[in-house]
Amino acid sequence: MEQTTQLLECLKEVYDPELGVNIVDLGLVYEVREEPGRVHVRMTLTTPGCPLHDTIVGAVKWVLQENTGKTDIDVQVVWEPKWSPQLMSKEAKEMLGYF
Image 1: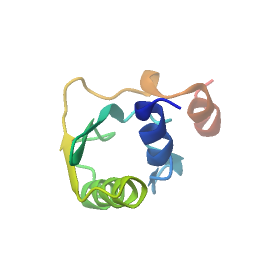
Image 2 (image 1 turned 90 degrees about the horizontal axis):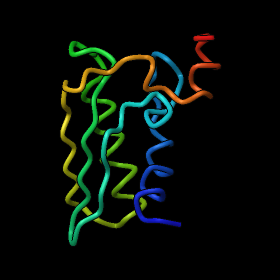
Image 3 (image 1 turned 90 degrees about the vertical axis):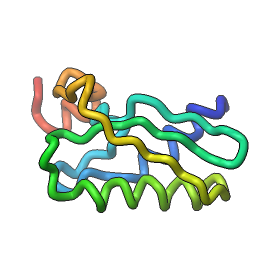
Image 4 (image 1 turned 180 degrees about the horizontal axis):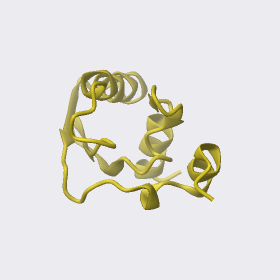
């Protein structure tokens, strides 16, 4: 399995507690890559004022540390491009009734 695919599979363990859907299927993860000594994640949240910002970012760091053994996990939360429901996977849209 490709490295990026493996990292995305790990990130499917992180759920948005309010929506009950993992952050990958929600379309919140824009980029994930493993570098020597660290993992870099570029992601967004559904809204800039998300009260669960720290909880979700902390879960991303924890799950990647547990699965890669690396302690340097760089999580960059960005607001561009802006998240929209169109970024969700078909499964997430079905779970949330977007059809």
